[in-house]
Image (cartoon, rainbow, N blue to C red; front, side, top):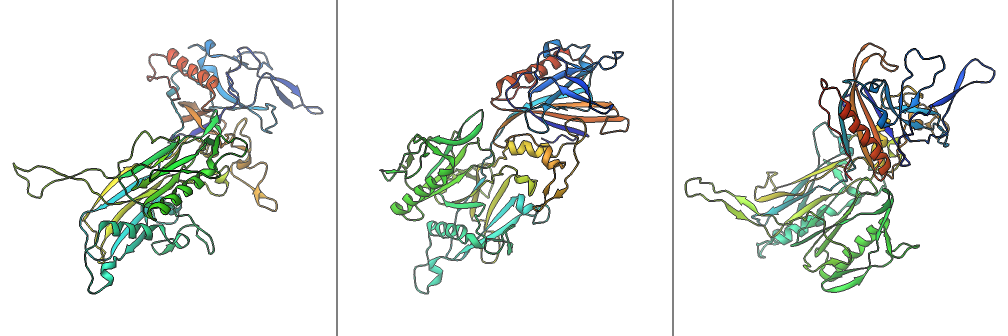
Length: 538
């Protein structure tokens, strides 16, 4: 989410804690031995990554007075101007609370709060584009596939998509006296073979695909399939506790091709034979593909497996086959079925009172399925991705490089970018402003040691607290700060954007924060901007 703020703070909770009880002192002040300096010993009732509310010490209080916690019920229109929101932090990750990461540079109160909102994790979807021939002649046909992803954006000029061209020459063009007719099936099969081939030699505009060095194998970021009347999309949602450790599904046992039931081989967890590990699903796809080729030949069925970022997101398996009775035991089609041959409207050239719109449903075609990248834990240390989507397109042209208009095109599935998985939250943490309690480390990174890794005071070593295997609900507050702050010394009006990221399964913490938002709405002065409470979707 774009926040356009002068000050952004990204906080993360863990442990499914409510706010601490009201009336607890935040800390005890002790003198550092041998010095006149003091140190804070935080209340041992507090837990690392627990959300916390507290009020500023009232003006005129005795020296040494310590702030105290407050609960949601105790917040009123009179004291909200002294309210602070934060998350308890253990800088050494040793279980000892030694600071509070605050949600803002100043307190929340009056008309300072401008907006409240919440959103949950969303999973990625592969973009699927299809093309269908209308009229074919015995000649070479070429297809151009354009690609836009994080790698190509770093490799090509802005707004210029990388492209790759594949061509197929039918058998009829390679002989003198043979029949010159050609079928759409031959063209589709030939082009699919060309597109899916040469995995180790992929180039884009005659340049190597980004990251392709000498001797490196490469998995092309899309796959072509010949479209058949049967196009199935299976959604397999990994199991986990509170969206943590999502690495298995119910065991895959059999699949049916041409009425024959075939057993999957070696697809159960070694410690629980009722489960299949998500890491074994590539092998499941390979066994189905092998079954199609043995029964029908290499164009009789195609299997594409994608998941993308977020281990707890559903894994999609797309199957295009001429076998109308194909099935996988225990799996059902995704809710939004993909129609491989949609109906197109064709308007007549001559438009008058008698004109009617004709329709056309193709019977042959090919589709390009974009694969999805997985962002591993800590992958941003090497390169922070600026774009996590992958968009594709397809167009045909003839031997004279003129766009071939005798084709129809369709988007069978719109792509979607995953968000609010753990590594996504880590990336937002990394981009937030540094400074103040809980963030008192270097802005940027200093690299040291034999491996050249960030040192102990670097931003990379200290700022991220999200777990990359977890999916989060995000609660945000947009507010204003008037005056100056510890990170913005000039007196002015500043926009502040604060996030509280809560593991999706932590119902206690989610309930507590949603109650806080409800209280903000209830006590808002009438002269302020209208607010609405926010609830994270389950």
